[in-house]
Length: 97
Image (cartoon, rainbow, N blue to C red; front, side):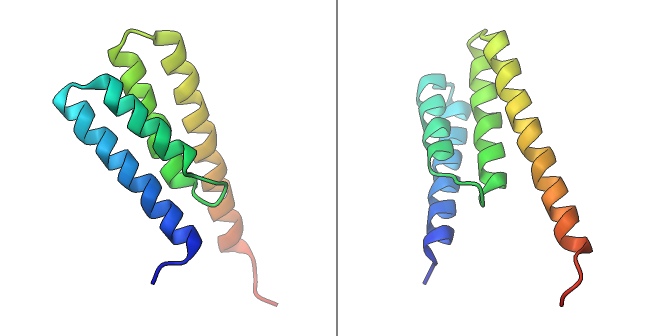
């Protein structure tokens, strides 16, 4: 049985994959909605799912010619990925008490 956090992350990743399927079929509107839903399901513990959802949204914005929005969204994804990397590095260097 999944914990609440694991269930939320699985839901976010499911929406992300649905978005990928819509994007692959060329339905950018449905893809964007699925990626937005994926991002809405995430919290601060689910940075990887949030980064994936943001990158999906960025792809949709690019396909629609929304260059400025895509740039802003990609910057959000990059910042979140950097934070995830820093948190992972910090956790790896901590010594147990």
